[in-house]
Image (cartoon, rainbow, N blue to C red; front, side, top):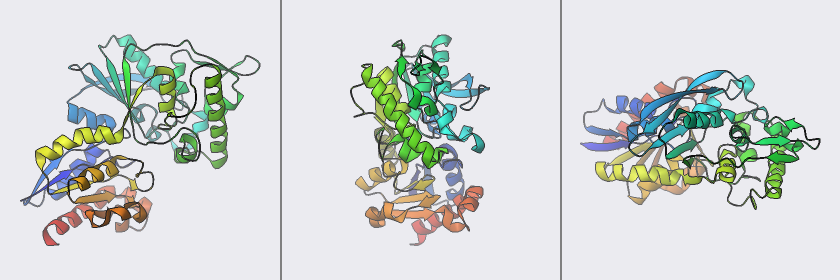
Length: 374
């Protein structure tokens, strides 16, 4: 009997990590000589809430907020723990790219006000909350979190004292900021999926805005706007410099750092804290992990990399099952990681996405063959 621990991350726009773990279990469970334990993980992005609800036995509570691209209301799920008075929220469930139709994916024109609205509704509900744990990742907005702050009184004005809408396209016009220094009745901890700066070549706009739908020109406008807003923050004594400000979530993390003094928990620490105890408990012979793509961004301590690093330190072989795998990004792992690229089973990337479950089935068969026939 061989033991395998299934610890996948989410596969963007294909499957949450909890669903992926279930799919792998269904395939691998066909071999009676394989004992399977599921422990899906999340780096704060898509599927964060499902993972937390499953692993922490949370009560699901719902609220109605506006969509990220219009004022239409929709229902958002959160996870509540009455024992430690904590509420878990996934930013991708509120302002996520997955919620935004392709034709609306213009981050210069979007903001995070729906997330601020959700926090306001939590306050108004009277729910007994001491701490909110917010997973940041998979967002479709890139607005420095100023839309969030607008729900608590933040306003921007141009040189003529006219109020301007809080969207990144207008940041270059802003000359004055009004902030009532609102204090939340609970603390906030952010689980961030990447460790990158706010500005510059590795910053929020240049690194991530394109995947949210921005063109190169729009990214330039966004970077200029972010730079101008940071100067405005400095002039108003809200921040001293950009050093230490996170570019996660399109700068959402940075905005919450500046205006609400939040605590940031890196996904590496969040996942390791959950995973270590489970590995000790199960003592698996193999671990399977994966996500949509494993590339240079993954090396910024995204979910699958964190699992791999934990396994290598314990000398446990790892199956890395991803839609697409950049060979250069896994070259340093040598034969300690067995890569399986779902795209290799199909003609192209889109076909692999359309046939995701078939890809999981074929990958599962390769895993079984490797374990028992190598």
